[in-house]
Image (cartoon, rainbow, N blue to C red; front, side, top):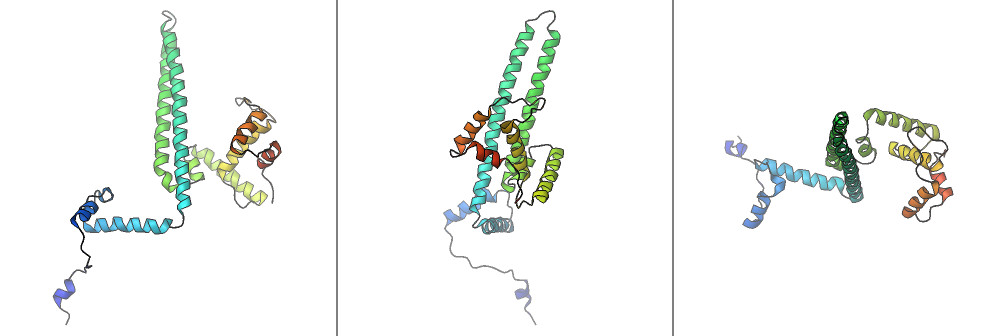
Length: 231
């Protein structure tokens, strides 16, 4: 008959001697914040080991995510600068409106409302971008772009990309590539002008900017790169 004590005895692992300084460093590590039991810490360690196994040999993907995060941070900085300039402009209009004693009351109210709206939009965009950055470690490529635009636009763009892939038998084509390609075709080819989207750069200026990134780029190669072709 099995010994009752042996039956209830908890399994143990005979560990090597651990210096007190090392034990304190482990127990007080920020990774274990909120862990109440040894099981909690063990689960944390298991997560770290699983993460290391999952990304072993895929360091370049993590590097790409870091680059995307840096790109998003630069967008945040650019947007902050843009909105700051807009707020400054609106502040100037507000001050000018205040000088109109008799007829300026409505102008003041309008400028104040516009200024508040601009600041509110800036704050909302900042919150959205902060959320994107926080989630960037789990997203790459189209997921990052999709999080920045209206869901309805994203759905249309995804369907359009799907049909382009089927029609032209393309192996790989992501929605953001379609979006950027159409944008560049419009401003570089300048075949027609849409209302509200004026051509404010010359083709030669666009080519010069591209050549700053790709020195060997020519006008012919750039035009070819902007086309969706059958294989």
